[in-house]
Length: 119
Image (cartoon, rainbow, N blue to C red; front, side):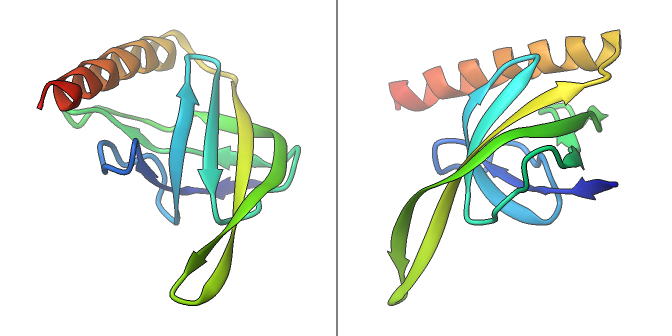
């Protein structure tokens, strides 16, 4: 079974919509894997279809498998304890177009991060 996932925040700023259901923060993104923080527990070995959108509205929907997921900490939000999980996923069954898209997206995000640091 393939699940849908969430909306992406990079360094606290909404840069790209990656998934449609939950919110998370990307820690590491490469053409083969992603490490993220989320308040949703994702089960190891589960599969997710992740919709990724570039700055020019090009989209891909690669399949990703959860490699590991563990409770990293809890944060207090509005007097409630919110769990924060660190999740590692790997992209599987990616074609050339998806690989090229990810390389371009990573480059785009690096450029945006550089511009944010300048301001």
